[in-house]
Image (cartoon, rainbow, N blue to C red):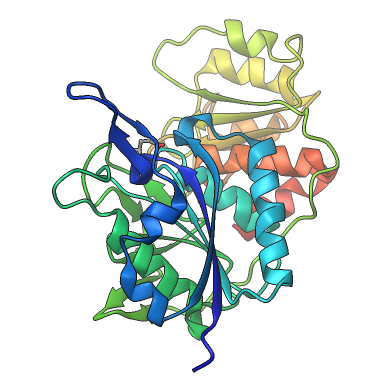
Amino acid sequence: MDLPTLAIAALGGTVSMQARNAGGGVIPTISGETLLASVPELSSLARVKIETLGLLPSASLDFEFLLSVLSWANFQIKQGAAGVVILQGTDTLEETATFFDYLWDHPEPLILTGAMRSAAQPGADGPANLLDACRVAMADRSRGRGVQVVMNGQIHSANAVRKSDSLALQAFNSAIVGPAGLMVEDTVRYLRPPCPRKTLPLPLQTSQRIALLEASLSADNLLLENIIAMGYDGLVIAGFGAGHVSGGWADAIEAVAEKIPVVIATRTGSGSTARSSYGFIGSEMDLLGRGALMAGFLCPRKARILLWLLVGCQRQDELALFLAHD
Ligand code: GLU
């Protein structure tokens, strides 16, 4: 039987971690090739090409590296891969998923997965997640859905998924919308049709800086007042509630928004920012009047990725369109 080709990249993360010596913490050491040996079932499902592109904790991934991973993934599709799977740490999975999703313009699926338990831990979830991710990447019904995260038997869309628990096995969720699909008896089952997506071209530059500040009670203005002088090209605020800040921050934001794009998201972890509910100083209506934009359902970290990519391809004028779309 002619098996489909599947390309897998290993970047590091808990899935690749084990301790070098007793009492030492786990660190990324296990190659993709070794991880592949933990899922022998795969050889009857696909012709697998696996490469270890990095052995990094996911906090140390950066945009330049992700662009090189993307170019590797694009090449795999050109070479005929039916789908691509990326294995990485879970700490920044929600951000890398968004990054790739805005840049992935193939119908073939790009699937991200990892593990919450390291390779030698009892009940390690890496092999099951890898096998599920491969099944999702090869499923015809995954085509046209862009980038998805597969963890613990659930499939999450890149624009909604977030890590919402630090150590639990069930660490990922998609607030409000829920998972896009599930693994049921080794089959991929989607719970809703694919959503229309908007993608971007590759950035022309990578030196742009986008700051992310979280509103907190009685916070001072020092960082906000120096954002422009520090050379930032955009600002995202994780605001209170439906996209709110203090009166002091509202004044500082107005001055920043005259110079660079400012996006206000919610720090709550669920739900949309408002547009026309509150009128107090520092409310969403006040901030919109001062030149800021509201992130809608996009969480602060994903809004920062969008702004970085838009500034990078000099299309920041389309920020409002992209935010309305998400
Ligand atoms: N819990 C994280 C993981 O699942 C820690 C390490 C990382 O993000 O690389 O991989």
